[in-house]
Image (cartoon, rainbow, N blue to C red):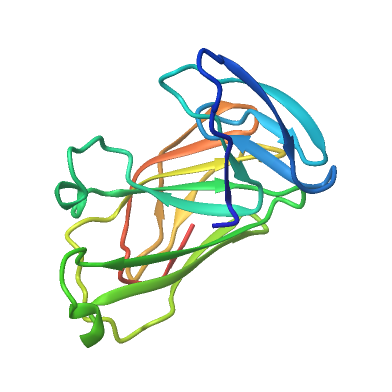
Length: 193
């Protein structure tokens, strides 16, 4: 989609490459393999391209759901928890979508799927189901939230789900990134952090 920019290496033996990042100076790009390394659009950059790692950039203003556990097949990952990687734009905003189904049948035609909108604005992360009558009940939750591009680190992180609000543990890996570990956020209900 529009949130990911991949620059393949096409010359044998090449270990770095130059690429032009789209957008103007207000468009931020994050390195997939380097937490909070930020580039701006409208310029050419030189990036390392070792054989084991393809150069990949993520567009600022995007929220990307990821499954980060290494598996031999996608069927084995169907119940793995999700990580939300939130890549803020220059206004500290981001949006994204999540679609889930059972991964192997046509039951999505009978309502067994989840489609949700995710947004970050004014230091609030919101998750809202678009199909509120979903029949799918996944056996996993969101196990990690990474917010990159912050101007300041928060003093507290509070989650509001269907029950009472709860304080979440978080750490700042640098001056611009916060990692919330084990928030146990559901994928089949509304919540905000």
